[in-house]
Image (cartoon, rainbow, N blue to C red):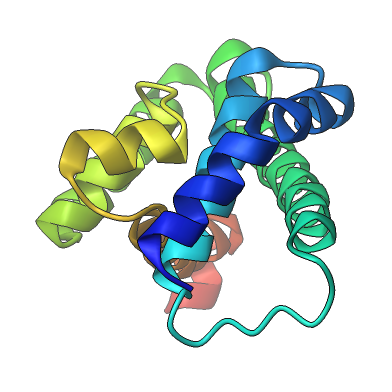
Length: 175
């Protein structure tokens, strides 16, 4: 698929695809993000992509699938944010000292991450930026942003998970 063909698909179908994505996501910016991801994926796969149905049907299916992926990612992100803030907002489980210790542990894990991975993670979780915004800001692809986020979350889960498990054990079991 050539650049002129992709441009033509964009011009012919963007408005209808946008309305379709908006009907699923109910948010203008999210719909635009999904369309950007769909067309970036189309561009990145242009040399190996073989569309067996009509281009229009392929684009609609891509927007549908990417919209569902987007909803899932946002749901997971909100769960992580809610979980992270629940410890800070509800110190009934842990006292202030323990919350401070966890914050130090998280900061230590962040310091050990590769710089690009850390930057992507902080922009997503602290600055609440969408993957497309991060990709544009760091001049990388959305897929690269996703890969960095996946790596960051694996590092955090692996490190913090072990630390959390150890913190739950009685002191005498560590001897």
